[in-house]
Image (spheres, rainbow, N blue to C red):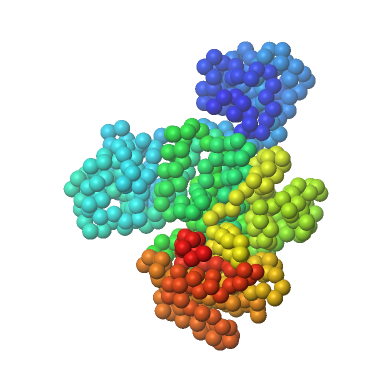
Length: 581
């Protein structure tokens, strides 16, 4: 870290010397002026010329203050001594705490306590040099790494032993795993809550590998991935080194394993320090049908965010939660986890608006008379009474996508990114895979990941606005497989609410493209059929997705619109269409 990195991290202005003053740079210690030694950094509420001269004589690395008094700036310039002038001393103090590296994890008992576990086998780290600082998967592990797995058997213990890893953490030891650990004298930690291990891994990795980064968490029922990816794009386009767990296929956007911790470690070791971490956190998370309680708050706290975003609160993950109040209870602790950081809240969602955030920033699809807000007035996005983006400059114009844009802009404003950089990032953004992606022109074919009631209603509503008069909207919906009757009942109810005479409906069980984890069961299919029949809505069902897409494309005229919606059962649609069109 050079002194300009430090100034930028604090949103401060550097005067005097543009290098740390001491020959060896910064020692890593933040302290008080009277206690400072060569290479230390001092943070003071105010400083005068006498204080600057003391800092100069004590050969400290630099001095940070929000209030230079009585010629302190002139003294720093005269002595060519580096002083960083900031706006917020609390933020500087928090930064100092983050930068002060925690003690290296040397005692395995500390890890056992952190994950509320018990240990069998060896009661010390197995590798000679202890823990390397890297959490990862078994097949990727090397000497000194820690592996986190939901389950492990005796063969896995032997693999870990042969790889000389530091230890292994699991929730479900089976098929002789405990006996193998004891026989090999290998440290196996067993916890009832594997999410504690993954939260510890994430927190430890960020504190040790990326202590200087500013971190953003995004949670909520809908729009997490688009919002996360847009924040990532704005920051990346502005020239920062950014890492996100939301990629183009959203493969790594859950935190139920050590993937994100591994990604951070690998990125830092390969490409040096990270400026921003943008982490998507599932609002409701479970494993094998069991809810991981307070997952969103647990993971948000682990990230230690500068900014958090809560997009909305709606029904999804039926079975893990059974009411909107259950979803609210999973999200309500997130602002507390964000703490003094900024919490970007969707003002249009009554439940989100009611959340108790210490430092809120609001977004809305209508005018807000607040300084800490950004809103859309129907024609443009407005910040501080000034339009910053017209509707024609937005990458997409559906209301639910504009809400995502507002959330991303609010997050970047809260990170103190310049409005010019934010505007440039929004204008150049390309949507994630399957986020209202246009796949064809004649007929227009849109593909969207809409997979819960709010998503279905919003996506159909926005598509109908694009439909020419006297034309048809052909909606092909993939039934959610192996998710239970309840969520499929809510989804078909949303379809019923959205239907009108301009819509032709097609259903797919997608047996030809899904695996066992996403196979549509008979009762899931029947709840669709029964509800549509009861409401006298015509539909055509296909067992296979390719047959469904072939028929939809055949029936649609060039001026019609085809809308593809659904989760895993619709994911391969684009590749299948390439053989049909």
